[in-house]
Length: 72
Image (cartoon, rainbow, N blue to C red; front, side):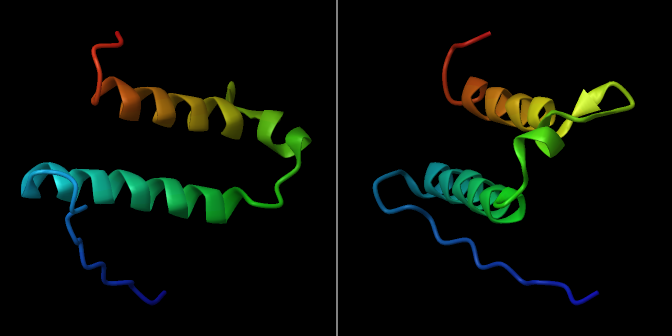
């Protein structure tokens, strides 16, 4: 399996360190959308060991946004 090298470029509207993290969050979102495009609702909802792809995506989104806001 070929490994992909990433170059993290800070998002220009933010302080450099924060801009890097924003870039990383955007990269995760972009990658997830690419990987799940074309997956049916049935597959997103199917449970394996009590979890579905949809519930895992929800958890990723919730933990990402909770790191950026005061949502708990």
